[in-house]
Image 1 (cartoon, protein in one colour):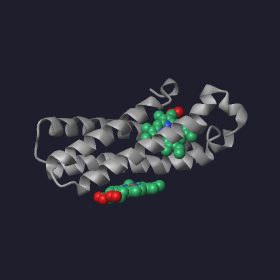
Image 2: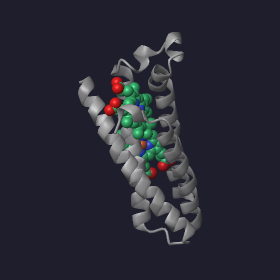
Image 3: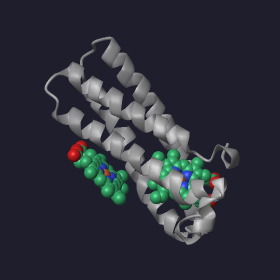
Image 4: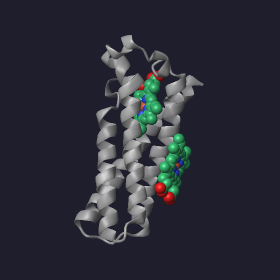
Length: 142
Ligand code: HEM
Ligand code: HEM
């Protein structure tokens, strides 16, 4: 079970990064080029949101079954940068990233103009992407 969820989390991370990168580039081009907010714009933003939410669910599961997650949460682990990454920094930053992406999607959905929709998505999706990139355990992944 643990190994299945772990490889799912690892593969979904790749999908999420790919989709989010593509969405951010598309959104920034739309924003800077004053483009119309079309059905495709909505779809690509939604793809980023869904990938993020799926990874949230899988991440929460792995946090409770991995020996590196909640099981390793202790004062001693705080002093070890590797333990701290998995039990605290990675989950927390990823959660904040997904919250940012969700706020961006939700606010953009309610925005009045196309320019504003792109602007809100640009800000909140870029913050999400930066948070994610900052706390991926690159040394064991890729
Ligand atoms: C934006 C979403 C996320 C991305 C891109 C991401 C990415 C990754 C990657 C690449 C790994 C290393 C996998 C490997 O060793 O092959 C990992 C491990 C891990 N992630 Fe995430 N993650 C995300 C969200 C979360 C969340 C929300 C949680 C928990 C609440 C979480 C908990 C963990 C844990 C506990 C591990 C260590 C698993 C182990 O090796 O036993 N992740 N994550
Ligand atoms: C822990 C699990 C989850 C939480 C806490 C969560 C939370 C949220 C929140 C707060 C929103 C924002 C609604 C809005 O203001 O527009 C949202 C939207 C959405 N979520 Fe999740 N979600 C979770 C899991 C999932 C999963 C597993 C999927 C499916 C793959 C998913 C798909 C979506 C979609 C498609 C929307 C956008 C709906 C729309 O068009 O407005 N979520 N979610």
